[in-house]
Length: 390
Image 1 (tube, helix red, strand yellow):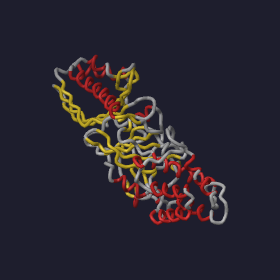
Image 2 (image 1 turned 135 degrees about the horizontal axis):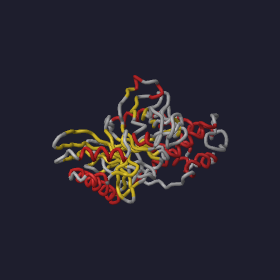
Image 3 (image 1 turned 45 degrees about the vertical axis):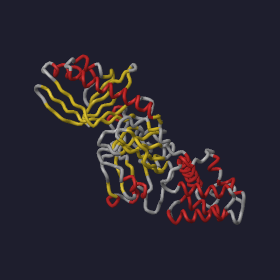
Image 4 (image 1 turned 30 degrees about the horizontal axis):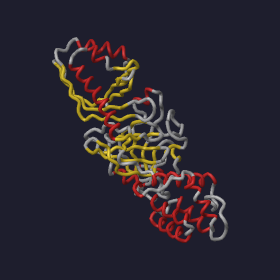
């Protein structure tokens, strides 16, 4: 019966991480899975079977737990040669093995409270929570806005695209990488069973995606069919998929129209000092842009725009021409910026989405609106690469 130890523990050997009681995750079945494997490691197979059966009472449709139970029962009659010795499709076995690995890794690698995702540079005052997805870890994290500082709240196992991440084209079976926002909520009763208890559509493709030629539509956060507890790490056509109970828990944190959903290949973490430094730098650039706009020095104001700037229908030359013409009719300008959100896009391009409420007043025009900008570093300086309505 010792064969099962080496066979099932190939899961743990795949990443060989020491468990830490100070950094475990409590959401979902991961803690119980860890106990099952601990019993196997100690060759306490009857204990492992009891724990697996207890797990299945809570999650009866948990296919991974059912597979482990099958192996444990089979080990009583014959030596095991690999994970998933019960009769099953090889592809399904591989999917379940991958699921076990990412679940146990997440259990052992809960984010350090002293670090935050680099992308949450500044949550707006009205954004109570933010969602950050790490596709490599098949994990979704929720952060609370604690007077501007992100604080870890919860994490959930989450599946993504069959072909991985970094979606470029419609039908490529990939999940997009970038900064998005929940735009609506759809009750599960209005959807096919595939989506389980419901869905949160997000705004893919966003303006930056469109600028880069990315296509596709219908990217959602949603649940699973009712006969399934969870899906393999790579199982969707591009959506982010959670167990129904996790989807319902997530619903408590989502504000339609406000909650950001940042999807990354692998989260970049910053300590709070470095996070504050990046945040301060961009805030200073935004404030300089605002002041230069109020100054009515049009050329100084236009110096904040990148060479490759584009609005929805204007390039930099056309933007400058219009702003110079408008500036000639101004004797005074006042600009207020409130509820500022600054969210960095994952990846190497360093793009930051900035959304704010703009209060504009001048001698001949007054307007209040929501504005979206994308800021980039150009020659070491923050510049605006896109501007439009939010």
